[in-house]
Length: 119
Image (tube, rainbow, N blue to C red; front, side, top):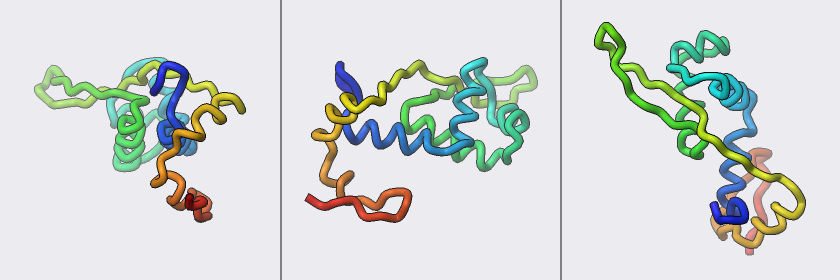
């Protein structure tokens, strides 16, 4: 991120990551307290495998972080917590980010299956 906000590619990555109801619920749950995969999966009513997938995507986008800790019985547990972030989404912020989009971002398919414009 630049001092004035995310680049176009960063903004796309953040919005794409958060454009999923499970990931929004995970961020909301982690806002209250850090948790491990099984705890979150039970709390949100989704499988551990799906939870791990969503947590990896959130971690790759820099929205959550993980630490590995040993439980009292010696079991390794990965705890996740939300990282502080603030993204301003306004016409001005989008206008500032748009010129920084990479050519690869412009040429990729969108989630709707539409082709992005090529330069």
